Image (cartoon, rainbow, N blue to C red; front, side, top):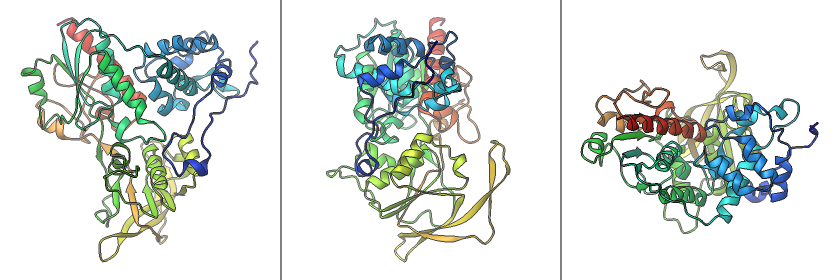
Length: 462
C-alpha cells in the first residue's frame, strides 16, 4: 500500500529580495536526493492518466520509474522519445493544468512534481552527456520550417530524426523564437535554448537566420525554386495588440513584445548592452497573463521602485500560472485587479506621467465563461507612472498571409489548419501560435509534432 502522506518536494529557489535584483534563474533545481524523494511518490498507475494530460504524450510513469532506479540518462531517453525540448518544458510548461492535473495522487494530496523531475533529468543529461546526436541517413526529402519557436523546433527535430533534410528559416538573428525573445533569463536561461538548437543542428537541421519569409523569400519560391516538398509554418504570434485609448503613442509606452525582446534577445539588462531601454521608476503593466508577469518582473529587475499589474478582472480570473503570480507577489509586484485603463497621461514633452483607470466589477459570464467586467461609473482615478507596458495579447503577423496565395486564414489572422496542421495549400502545414493565437509552449510543441507526423505520411505516399 503506497504511503499517501509523503509530502511534495519543494523546489529550492533564490530568496525574493535577492532575485528581484538579478536575472539569474529563480528556481535552482532539485538535488539528486530531492529528485529521488519526489520520484518515489509516483504510484505508477496502470492507466497512466498523466500521459493523456501531456500534449506530446510523454511516458511519464516510465521516465519517473527510471529516476527511482537512478537511471537518469535512461529517464532522459524516455522523455526525448516524445519531446524535443525537455529542459525547456521542465521550466515553462504549465504542468499544473496538464499532466499534473491528471495525477491520481493529486486527488487526495498534492500531485507528483512531474515538471520538476523533467527539469532535473534534462539538466542531468546536459551536464553529463557529451555525445553529440548522430545525423540519420537522408531519405532524400526536403522540408522547410518557417520559424524557430517551439512548434518549429519540434517539427524540425521529429522530421530530422526520420532522415528528412530540414531547413529552418528564422526572421530574427538568433534561433529560438519566443523561447529567446519572450521568456526572461530568470525563468528560462538562454544557454538552455541554445543547447536545444545545437542538438537539432547535430541531427542535420540547417538554421538560416535573418530570413523573413514573405519578404526575403516567399513560400512559393521555397517550394517551386528551392526544391522543398513541404513547408511548416510555425511563425508564432508576434503582432502586439493595443487598447486604442488616448496616450498609447506617448514616450514610455511599450508593447510587452518590444519590451521583452529588448530585455531578453538584445540583453538590455546587461551593463555593457547597447540596446536602449527605459529604466523607469514607476511601471504599469496592463494585462494578467504570463507575459504580463514576465514584463513586470523584468521591469523590477531593471531598477523600478514600484511595478503594478493592472487587470480588469479579479485575481481569481488571472490567466497567468499560479506559480508566476506567487513569485511576482513575493518580489513585491502590486496587483491592481478590477481596474481598467482608460487613458495614458503625458507632459508637454510627450513623456508618460500617469495612467487613468476606472474601477470594475464582475457581471454576467461572457462567451469565454468568465464573468464580464463592467465599469463602475464615476470611479476614475489616476496612478502616477512613467512607463506603461501593454500586455493584452498578440496576433499572428499578417506578412505570410499577405504574400501567399490560397492560404486561408481566420478574420483575426490565424492560419486555418486541420487537426494535423494541413492548411488550404497542398503540402503546406501550420501549427502553434500562428494557428491558435498566443498559447503555451507545450501546445505549440504538440502541434509541431502532429504536423511532422502528417508531413512524413504525406511525403512517404507521394
